[in-house]
View 1 (tube, rainbow, N blue to C red):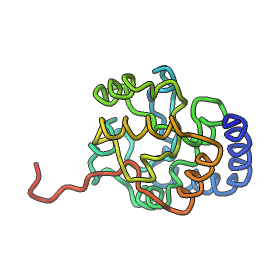
View 2: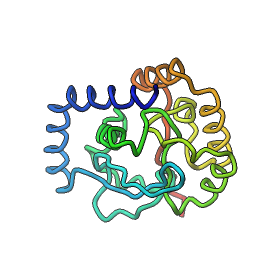
View 3: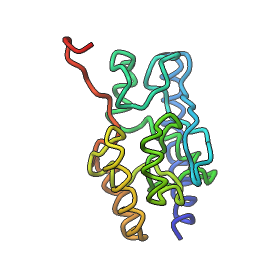
Amino acid sequence: MIRVLDVIFSVIGLVLALPLLAVLLLLGFLDTGSPLFRQVRVGRHQKPFTLVKFRTMRPNTASVATHLANPADITRLGHFLRRTKLDELPQLWNVLRGEMSLVGPRPCLFSQTELIAERARRGVFDARPGITGLAQIRGIDMSAPKLLAETDQQMLATLSVASYLKYIAMTVLGKGAGDRIQWRNDGDA
């Protein structure tokens, strides 16, 4: 049933957001010359897939987990997109293609070996990765691999249509922060 809801909501979302997607593509082109960001992530059963988002950082920025990224690499438009979570809209395409779900564990990079091991140990990779989930609602990011994997496991063990809809509603209403850039003090190396 959740896959059916994923397809319905992603189609509706893509159709309704089409004008906004077009505007953000144009703004992104003006901002960086390359409005879409594509990155290979760990998918269901640890198979790679290419995640698509609106670009929030300058092109040629190092491909690292968000919590390790340099805040100076975020563009002005990127700050807005991250704050409003609009950078996530293109992932509706990943959901429609069956690579992701609206609700599930956030897909990690293959370089995040500790998180991959924790998730594999808990069977988290049996599910499609998601745009949002319990960890994002609680503000747990990928800098805490064990806690994140435990939270993902807990979410998947209790995932129902009702909780699926609840996580989506909470995300739309702005609950949680998900993965975020770690702002460094001037004295940090």
